[in-house]
Amino acid sequence: MKKCVGIWIDHEKAVLVFIVADKETTTSIESNVEGRVRLSGGSRSRTPYGPQDVASERKKEERHKHQLRRYYEKIIGALGDSKQILIFGPGEAKIELEKEMKRSKELGSRIVSVDPADKMTEKQIAAKVRDFFRLDREESVWR
Image (cartoon, rainbow, N blue to C red; front, top):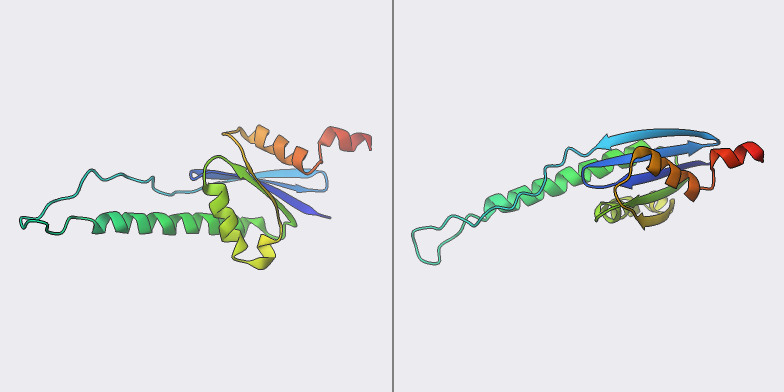
């Protein structure tokens, strides 16, 4: 049996829809990634052209990258032995996840498509995944 998975992803959460034969299961994974905080200016030193407080901004950026990487690894860990993977969603998260998955040749070769999509409900996500893998339940009853 071929195990297919569709992943709707943004930086806040991912919804995974697994399809095996005619059974469908949905799982949500929260990112727990801190939002990017824009710091207003830096603190000036008393000396002219002295250093400004940039270190904390770099630290926050590095922490954000590490949190995203852990989020993507959690999603990849949940994929198991899925043979075909569809990734879709708004923003850059889908592309970042694809890059993370392509680090592994085996996993990268299972990606069948990366598509843009708007915010969706879980039912809309499941319907899109079913349509993509042509496993609409009503059609399979009549075959």
